[in-house]
Amino acid sequence: MLKPLLILALGTTPALAQMAGMNSGSPMAGMAQSRQGVAGSPLMEPGQSAFAAIAEVVRALEADPQTDWENVNIDLLRQHLRDMDVVTIDSTTQTDQIEGGLRFTVTGSPAVAPSIIRMVLAHAQMVDGIDGWAYSAVAIKGGAILTVTVPPSGLAKLKGLGFYGLLASGIHHQPHHWMMANGMSMGG
Image (cartoon, rainbow, N blue to C red; front, side, top):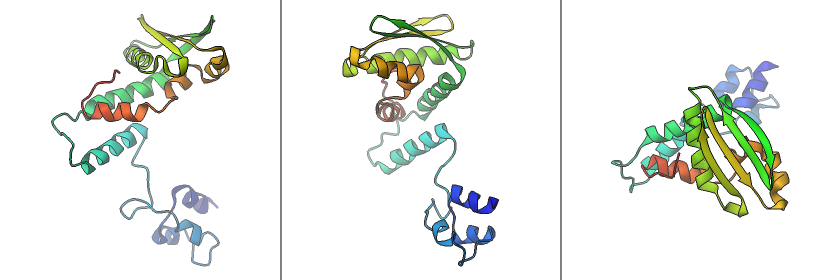
């Protein structure tokens, strides 16, 4: 039973189906062959999320004949993606309700604090004013404080998203990452 589950999770080629003991009479044989991978492999994902994001950017840069390789800065993008992971995984947040919004005190170890400061300050600057939500941020010892005030109709959403949901919401990440990779700054 483990082999078919593995094949469903990964997709397959006829060769992998044969290795898994699935013959053409198997009820899963047609389904297993329907997923296409990359370069003859059954796989689509090039690695963990930061690696995958960088790989996507590199493919787009290579496909664009207008790419100015003198300005490309994948190292800057990598640092930002690292900051995203570190803040999401290794920070802690205390949330306090304030009039019209929430205050998030985000802290971490000495190794995590610089990532928190870069992410929180840049995020506040980038999204301030969108949909009538006001963001302000200050660096503190060990991290940063993010204050968000919203129209009354947005308070439930703000509470539901919390700090980590706020960081992940919106569609500004892709343009931001593209600009960073091309050597243009949009903040941390």
